[in-house]
Length: 479
Image (cartoon, rainbow, N blue to C red):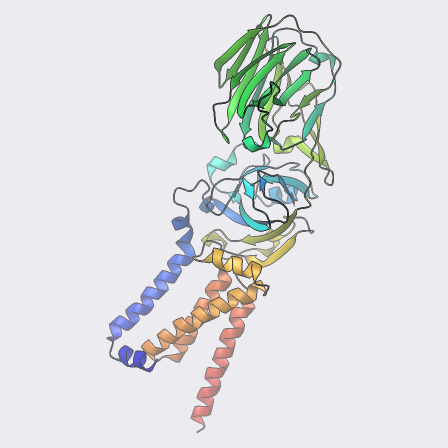
């Protein structure tokens, strides 16, 4: 330090103040504009949102691919605070690289917690995965209707009570927008003619009725349509996590199978018979999103929609948050409302929820906005709205999550060290103790503004330094 002091004394005064100015500008730039540097070419741009929540998922079981994880949110609170609109839009979920994560929200008008189902691509065993949910978008892109969809994992099912209106024997079509996520979720039998069949719409039994969906055989996925005893199918070529439209028509005796309005295969069948079974959606459909689906009749004349599910967030209501039961509204106007059941054990997951800022617009926050967003049963482990876009945040966050020390203590310690180093440089350069103390305070305040610890930590340290300096000057004047 003595050698450094000698060298600094010989440095021109303009250079000394230039270094200080450079440090100030650099710190200000990191604090305000760091997200732009992290979001270049990103799928989700945090700058378009006014608030954010970090959702930590600790998987205490085996590794899982595309598992649905239930996070209970009070949707009405989010809507009242303008974090989401009445369609469930203005919200996105992303991983640490800002790639979008699919999710299914529901029951927007509920004033109690209801399950939002988040579907990360992978949850490694015995590992915590952090996802960021961005809320309150000010971009016109997110002000429109959101295509929510229903994610069928394993043994999930929507049941529509039997109706004579489903006894359609000619001129009908089945249609859905679909996205398949994971081939490994299918059995895909090899060496046998049997197939692992998942139904999008199913009112077919013992070679009678109609159905269509996706099936896997010999490690190959097929789209298929089944009318009476005739099955028509085509290989799935759209790729995983890619949305496509699947449509099947029956115009006696012809069967047509379309993918994205392109005819893929044809067949013929005799007249359709009717049965008295319920209509189901998603039977044995594995790791597949159905974004909407409909049954139409009179397709050669009036083309009437008999049943349609959009699976919008405000169409779905959770009736039992323990066994994951709920209802789905039929938007065709024919009141064919469905009931869903989900087989999704959540015992392997531990959730940790914390909030953080996403931009300079949140330097001053209203504490009321952080209330009633999530259910009280979750572990709120952060003191404030942490800005997780600072350099080395992921390293510090991991240390804070695994070292067993209080989170604020770790971050406050790191910023204290940075403050001491910065203040020492300023003191050596200027010989002005008040300026050094001010620099120390600015760096500590920077940590508070970014939500890493409470304001009293910065105030206490700076107050202590001022007291020490004042007392030393008082003692000096008396000697």
